[in-house]
Amino acid sequence: MEELASMDSEPQSKTKMMEILKKMHDTENPCRNPIADASNIPDEEFDILDTDLADDEGEKDSDDDESIPDLANRLEGIDLDDSEAIWHLLTDDEKKEFETLVKNDITKILPVWEPWWLFYKEKKLVSEIDENKLNDEFDYRKACPSIIENIKDFNDISKSKPAPCVKYNIVNVLSSYIYMTRLFNGDHYDLGHEAISCFILLSGNLNKGTNFENIDTALEAVIQESFTNEAFACSKTDKDQIKYDLKRVLHGPEECNKIFYIQCALSDVLSLLINFKKSASTKVTKKMDKTNNFTHKFSWNGEIQNPIPKEKYKQTVKKIEYYLSFIKNHGAETVTDLLIDLHF
Image 1 (tube, rainbow, N blue to C red):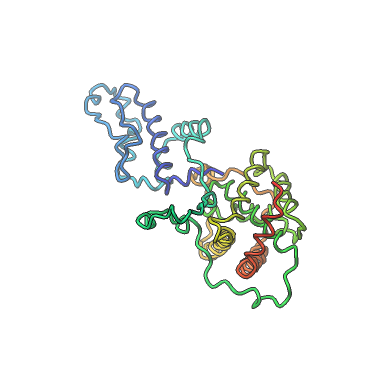
Image 2 (cartoon, helix red, strand yellow):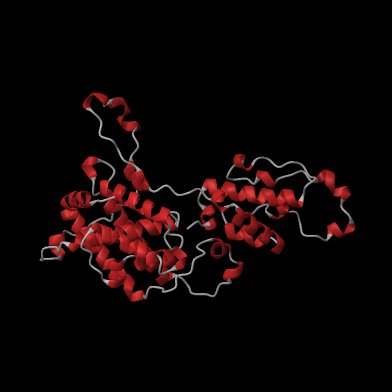
């Protein structure tokens, strides 16, 4: 769920990585000058490891002259946004120390992702509206995944009346999406294959073609499916969180835009599927030593026991497109019915 690979893009996570390297540097150099607090690091410099070693040069013995350069010196001129480059500069002992520090306190290394669907805009009374503050209001649309453009009308792709199970099948898909994004801490695009496999495996509707008759079984099926793969088994806390998240998605960001979060979720996973297909078709296949690769070593540490066949991706894309069209034309009444059916 938590990926050190995301340090490349998250300023807070990058700072945490710098703090770990600082601890390692202090361990190697206990008698040297204190290093500045990592929270004050500018992005363009690695000041926390920049120490004046001039006073110590005379104290080195002959063996030290042939030793590995100080960590600060090795990192000089390295792109600090490139975790792989930093990783390959570390010695075997430093890598082991880094791993130990990560495993002992991983929750402090990466901030827990806050889902975009948690925001809700309360309806204001006319008397509370201040025209001067309207421009300063939080625009939730910018914080959410972009909705796929040119979604087809449902009537253009199906001449039949949608079955009652469609809305509950969408609940099953949404619950799987929620659990997958939580599991990958919002970094599902960084590990597309694993995230997509997890998403499809958890959804009985997508993986097995199961149709659901009510909202409870649609959600519970995702929970039960999680136990079939120990890499993402669901706990009691996880189950309660998914229920809460599903409720927030169905309520939408505000009273007048209830279907927005559903559209965002379906669009996000559709984009994930399409992007993965593009990257897989253009990427040059080559062997990689995963045991000595930073991204693989510190990213998703679960193992998908039953990887999804490639043909399943195309089927999933078609089904997500179908659900987007359904929500476009029948979203309002669907959400109303689902909120009435909520028993949690």
